[in-house]
Figure 1 (tube, each protein chain N blue to C red):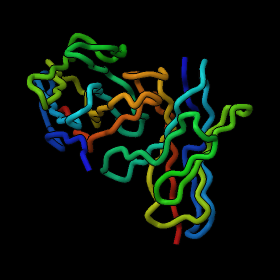
Figure 2 (figure 1 turned 90 degrees about the horizontal axis):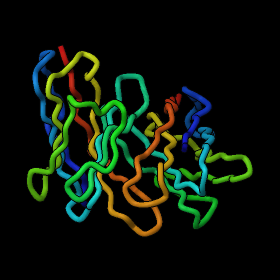
Figure 3 (figure 1 turned 135 degrees about the horizontal axis):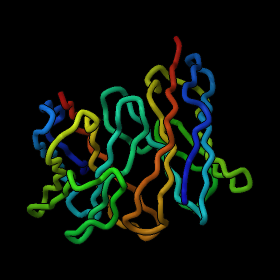
Figure 4 (figure 1 turned 90 degrees about the vertical axis):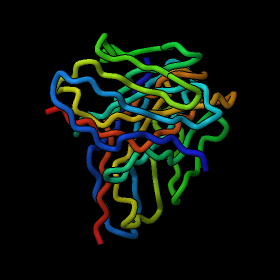
Length: 115
Length: 115
């Protein structure tokens, strides 16, 4: 069965410093992996997706993630945090690598950005 | 840009009452989903729906829950007799198979409060 583990429930950074949100996955096949962001009282917005085309994936708002099969990791990074990045971030794996499969969410990492 | 919409944004109901949560998926999508997020917990899959029938459901999705696509645009989740533990944010999602991955687009959610 597919699963994801987000290693930090809360990360706090200063504005302008790098962001690292860690995610490890477990999958019996080459997975489709996603990062979603949820701002307070908002829905879930797709940040980026890995679909086996390239191991380094660039997303919106300057975020990127690197798929490392040897480490079963898909960590999310950003070189310089902005106040507007404060939100909950979810690492997600698709249950099946085909149409209609459910998404399996990690526990979430709350990112705080200090001025 | 097309988006998934959900109504109402907030629903308050008494325990034992029936509620219907409504969603309008993106128009050319064929796969529809409901997820829920209890406050402070991770997002959980409830049910997926394709070709006018349930494709998959979780153990949460018991006989108290049902889904329906009553017309060509709406997708509804009905809870027959609400319990206190049904209080959560309910997210609708839809997807179109791209041939390579399963990207799901989420609505803004309906916050259900059961008193």
